[in-house]
Image 1 (cartoon, rainbow, N blue to C red):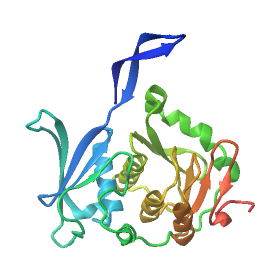
Image 2 (image 1 turned 60 degrees about the vertical axis):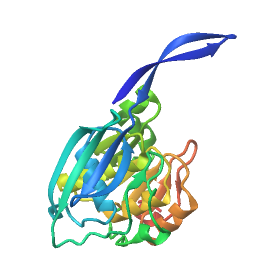
Image 3 (image 1 turned 30 degrees about the vertical axis):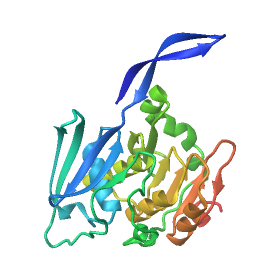
Length: 266
């Protein structure tokens, strides 16, 4: 999911032609019960996983059984732009919240764009219940282990990855996207579609841990979140409150910010 585009490089006082591999960023519009809900910028692969993960982490459904239909198609607009449309029908008995008026937009760099207020983010999110424990030796292997599942990043330098591992460090599912929150939603969507349990798994993200990433993690029920860079202060606060073990594996560190009791030997 990338394009090779012409560019120029500057070296030793002169410009030279070059080719650049750039990750695709495209729009997808999610339409729920015939109501246009949100326009998301994403990398157009594993679309169903993204859509299912998004509507779940938004609190619009509690399980995939509440989705009666999901039709995904690519449509052409009047300006010549192609947009992926995901038309979802949610069960009549599920009164999904209409907290926004008009169309929302979520850019690839922002997982909470379009929210009307801070407290909307936490609606329906509960503390993670898990007694699973994990080996520090396994956790410390993820900075190298995640690289195996980042072909788009290796090609373009512009992709984020989210990888789900079990307690032994075995990969369960992995996805890449131009947006780190999109990659996370794809993983969560895959767990819903495939019926993968979350209480004994480790979620690893190539990006930083921010508030909305921790809230998505809590909603899905993952007990451990490992990031490859430093978290935000709000992410740490949320991880403490929602009973998530939050770690960063930034270069030269392996910091544990919350609920270290899940790590064997602590």
